[in-house]
Image 1 (cartoon, rainbow, N blue to C red):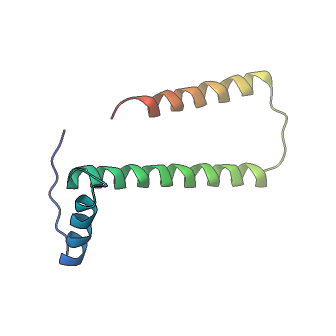
Image 2: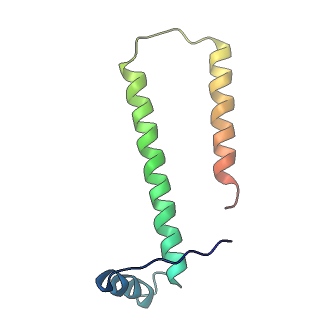
Length: 86
């Protein structure tokens, strides 16, 4: 695991310390990791939404069984990648 040092203005530092003091997180590192994971999820949801909108706005085409097999394989690969421990 890598170490990162960050600088925060006093109000943000007090806010983070408050989150830890409330018992929501056991450490600053845990809090920051959770924020990063939430940001990853948000970006993935934005990407999915953009792709869905692109699909909805594109001309209709017939999907073949081979197309569905390729889509399914790609989805399963992505799902397995998200399940791997970080």
